[in-house]
Amino acid sequence: MPTYQAPVKDTLFVLNEVLGFERYSNLPGFADASGDMLDAILGEAAKLAENVIQPTNRDGDLEGCVRNADGSVTTPKSFKQAYDQYREGGWMGLAVPAEYGGQGLPYSVNQAVGEYFVSANMALMMYPGLTHGAIAAIHVHGTEEQKNTWLPKMVDGVWTGTMNLTEPHCGTDLGMLRTKAVPNGNGAYKISGQKIFISAGEHDMSDNIVHLVLARAEGSPEGIKGISLFIVPKFVLDAEGNPGKRNGVTCGSIEEKMGIHGNSTCVMNYDDAEGYLIGELNGGMRAMFTMMNEARLGVGAQGLAISEVAYQNAVNYAKDRIQGRSLTGPKAPDKKADPIIVHPDIRRSLMTMKSFNEAGRALMLWTALKSDIAHRSGDDGDRQQADDHLGLMTPIVKGVLTDKGLEHAVMAQQVFGGHGYVEEHGMSQFVRDARIAMIYEGANGIQALDLVGRKLGLNGGRAVQAFFKEVGEFCEENRAVESLAPFTKALKKGLNDLQAATMWLMQNGMKNPDNAGAASTDYMHLFGLVSLGYMWARMVKTAQDRLANGANGSADFYQNKLTTGRFFMERVMPETQAHLARISTGAETMMALPAEAF
Image 1 (cartoon, rainbow, N blue to C red):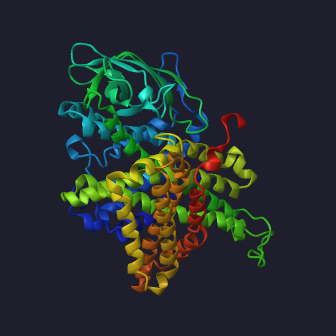
Image 2 (image 1 turned 135 degrees about the horizontal axis):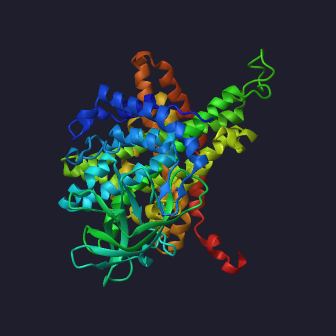
Image 3 (image 1 turned 120 degrees about the vertical axis):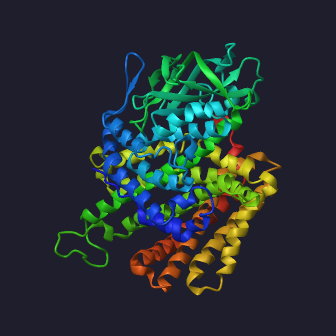
């Protein structure tokens, strides 16, 4: 059976020592998450993840969800009790303003504990995860009345939320949606249509489900300019604000999926359901992106979380499984064979996963910290810089971390050999669960196109130039530090490759848009490698400084950082060259064959 231990020490290292969390104590909420309090929050989250949530993961995969004859859905037996402990602990509202019942803590802290919970049970944590996105949309775009009506119960977790975007004929191209909204004369609308792939669309863990539904109001223009967003609750509220009559929204079926079996992914049917416009009429896309951006960062964290838990179980197995002898002589002479962790190819897999997880965690938390600055700082310049960074990095965090999440789940499964392919050890579940993160909240190919087609040129390239400047200055400022040379030289080479790829796109993408499309996925991963390499350079610099100052009893921890970072720079970072080579070939051969030739 799989096990999990939350990487609390590593999270604290990144937040406190690398990112300088205490420097932001002037921002709202940060003073309540400093020092001992941050330690306590992460410690309590770890206990909940390890002792309550993780034991439900296997149950959820085996039992799945059941749609009953009346259209209701029963979740796995162990889920409700675990969800209630999560809810009662106040975890849903960790980063939500206190005026709506939240704790107002930094979003970066929410992302940190979110990794633990998802590693423990991804399918279960999708129920509150979708609620977070719905809360964000209502908080940003709702009226005061809407916020006061819906948010307190959603923040408390007694009500949950969903995002209803996709239709059978309409995925990424939302301009084709057919769900319609007709005014009913009292300020509300009648919503009719069908949505598919709706995570947590119907379940038995909350008293009400608040669906946020994209629809086209009667008389609105075609295409995305005519889309609006509506609040459509499962139960219409009575005069006292409590769930009353059942609304015209039902679960038509549960999708049969490859993974995340414990999450009820539903076909939702809307039949003159009562809905309430949120934001401006025909302004649904703007409101939708508030949900999507929140969700995309959360999905990126899912990729990291699965990579981490799969890695941990691969390490445990590699230390325990004995097969063959070390190439340099027996390492366990008292046994018939050595543990497989002595073999270089097993080490290659483990070090690849470990070096990614530690840098990916830093990248996720760095990006989350930028979100805190963008939303909480009182300085206009700081907010703009942070918002630029957030927009640039969101598709990279989502696309790269989830692509690697699946890759590493498979890599961890491979460490188990045949035992990884059978269900007994639980490794196949990590592979099956990780697969969806590459697809939902905008498939990763769309993330790459968003990066190349929108984010690079936004505001005259202000965000990407700021990133180049920051990484370049780090390399230059530390160029003379001999102990950092293996890291700064590798990082500078990767940055040069990224800048060359960016220049190539500027010169060739406009005259033939297919060049940009053909380059997009390689460019996203090239950018991701440089971002992860920058995180490693910062972590190594911090570790070296701590070792030089005595390490305070953690010398092994910091020394391991140096070794793992060096592995990344030597064995992973050189992949930037391959991405640049592929980008530079353009789209000619990719687009040359006629469709009939495939």
